[in-house]
Structure formats: structure tokens, C-alpha cells
Length: 344
Image 1: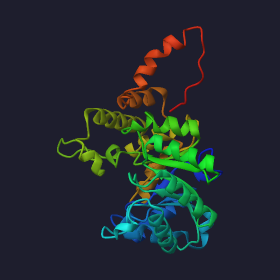
Image 2 (image 1 turned 180 degrees about the vertical axis):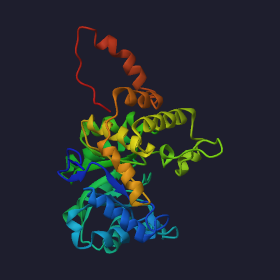
Image 3 (image 1 turned 90 degrees about the vertical axis):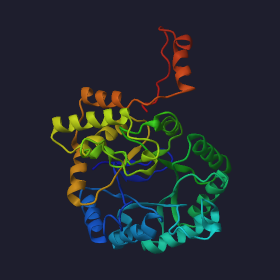
Image 4 (image 1 turned 90 degrees about the horizontal axis):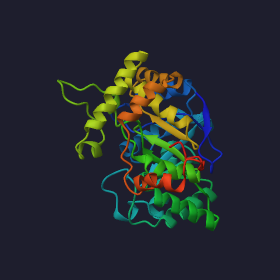
């Protein structure tokens, strides 16, 4: 396992892959979850992602139990805004400063710690001004309860605005963003990844396998499914999704590894070619499943293999990107060398 800084605004060393705990305490019972955490730590993993909303706080309790006396050996990120219970009182829902402060105090108790390494918003709240979120981060960092702040699943313009406001007002900088990103879901390449590279955010990529889509085989001739609601509610998998799935499985057969390892290897390859830090978030229900995925750390996809997966999942950039690409020959004729374009 290698380590990287979490973006250019944070001198926080994190593992090149994070471990997600979204199913800990439900689909993955406590003892099995502890075994997965142990396997991850044995492989050199030190970056654990959890949330207040995972199983009414049970995932945080499991992470806290695992870290215990070795708390400082791990970078622990948690999220607020998706409540611990569905019947929480209205004033503490969303990303307001009141909700943030209340959630952080509860997370600290469940994790058994006095600080959170990275605090993320768990989604996008249309009502809370981004100034309030950044002021809340600054207050918690000043109090020593949080070390770094990050935005989860926010539009690029809002993340850029948050970073600018913090810089101008002398608040703690926005360290990182999270987004769904992987071979089967590459919409982040339109705006989010270029913004992260330009501004220096670290990026934690959740569900790199499309909610398990790339790791699954369809039953009875049916297309493989994703456990992500926004996939199934939007008519996915699409023909493009299935094309990526087929290429990933074919490469996996060539390399004699699990398809999950190829999905993670594709993203790790993309991360190594990025000018900012991109950290894939792995998930597993058993140590054996995690070990199969961790083989991605040693996989090297050939240019041909990577190119096939790239081509199958190429995102439609839309406007204004297509218009601007068409204008390049006008602005930059053949005898001119324009500035380098970010790898993402």
C-alpha cells in the first residue's frame, strides 16, 4: 500500500485506497466488519470512511471499537446530514451549523475519540448557504474537534465557491470532495475532476464499481444490477454500462483476477495520471473479498486493456465542453503548443 497527500490543500497522508463502511452493522455484522478492518490494516490501509447515517451510527461504533488505542494510526472520515434516524427533529436535519455541531458531538462519542480527521457533508442540501458550511468547518477545526473539511456529492461550482470563500475570509481551506466515480460512472470527468485538479481538492471516489455492478454476473440472462437506488430509478444499466461490464470481465479473465480488481485497477491507474489525489473507496463483506479487490494494487493494465475500458465508458461531455473542443483549432493552430490539459 502506498500513501498520498489528500490534495494540495491538506498535508494529510492517506492510503491510496480507502475502506468504506456503508454496510457495516447491517449486511456486514460487527464481527465480520472487524475482520475486514483487520485485513485492510494488515495490508497497510489507514484511511477509513464512515458516516453518522450508516445503520443509525452502528458503523461508527464498529470503527471506533476497531481503532481503539491505535486511533492515531488511522485517518477516519465521517459524514453528517443524512440523519441517524428518519424521525429526527426538523431543526437538526440537513447541513446547517446546528445539524453539523450536533452530529459531530454524537459521532465523537460513537467513535470513542476526541477528533475527526475529515468531516464530510453527506450529500447536497439546497437550503444551507455554503458560507455557513465553511464557517462551521472553521469553528470545529479551531475547537480541535475536526482537522479537515470536505464536501460530499456537491456540484463543482459549489465546491469552487466554498474554496474561494474560505480563502478570502481566512477560514480553514476546503480539503477534498467526494463523488461517485469509476469505469462505469464517469460523469465526474465533465466538471468535478477538472475543478479538483485546478483548485487542488483531493477526491474520494465512492462506489468505483457502480454499486457492485462491475463485480456482478447477471442471473438467467438478465443484466447485472447495482444496489444504488439512483441507478435503478434511472433505467440503468444502460447499453454503455453493459459494454463497460463486458470489457472489465474480459480483462479480468485475461489477468486471472476478480472483475472487482480490474475495476479498482482502472481507477488507480487514472489516479496515478491525475494532478490531484484520487482515492478509490473499497468495500467488502469478508476478508477474502477484500483480498481479491486489493490485488488491484499490483495490477498493471496494458494500454490496450485500459483503452478498451475507456472507450466503452466514454462520457458524453455535453456543452460547453464539446463547443470548446471544437474551437481549439481556431485558438490553437497546428504550430502552437497550448498549456497541458489536466489528465482527468
